[in-house]
Amino acid sequence: AQSVAQPEDQVNVAEGNPLTVKCTYSVSGNPYLFWYVQYPNRGLQFLLKYITGDNLVKGSYGFEAEFNKSQTSFHLKKPSALVSDSALYFCAVIGSSNTGKLIFGQGTTLQVKP
Amino acid sequence: SAVISQKPSRDICQRGTSLTIQCQVDSQVTMMFWYRQQPGQSLTLIATANQGSEATYESGFVIDKFPISRPNLTFSTLTVSNMSPEDSSIYLCSVVSTGVLETQYFGPGTRLLVL
Image (tube, rainbow over all chains, first blue to last red):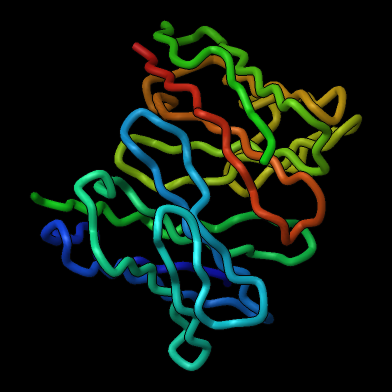
């Protein structure tokens, strides 16, 4: 079965420090991976995706993610965190390339402290 | 990306009643989905809304409880029927503009509280 795991419920970093939010996946076939962010009382906003090509994917708001096939990971990163980055982050994978349905991880709360 | 709106944005309902949530997109899209996000939880897919035909429901979700319509390529509704407090959640619609591997964009969500 297709699945996504985000092993950390919460990540705490100081403003200006690099941040990493972890994601691992389990799929049959090619993985199609996404990161979304949810701010309080808001819907989900798309950050970036990996479909094919370069393993390092750059997205919105200075975020990037590295696809690692051997480790089945797609960790979200940012070189310098901002307090405004504090939000709930979801990793997702397309469960079936024929249907486009997304399977989400459980989410990781990122807290950036001044 | 498509601009997606949902109505209502939030509601408080009594148990046993039904609520219909609307999802409107500013352009034609190929796929529309409905998700549920229970308090403190991740998103779970309820169903794929199919234009002009019955929705495709995920395991654990049934048409009698969550009837869905999609009369055209820009609009869909989700009804939460015979509500109970356990239905208190955020309901989100999402769309894909072209192919199945394209980015899925989400509406702002409808926050439902059932008393």
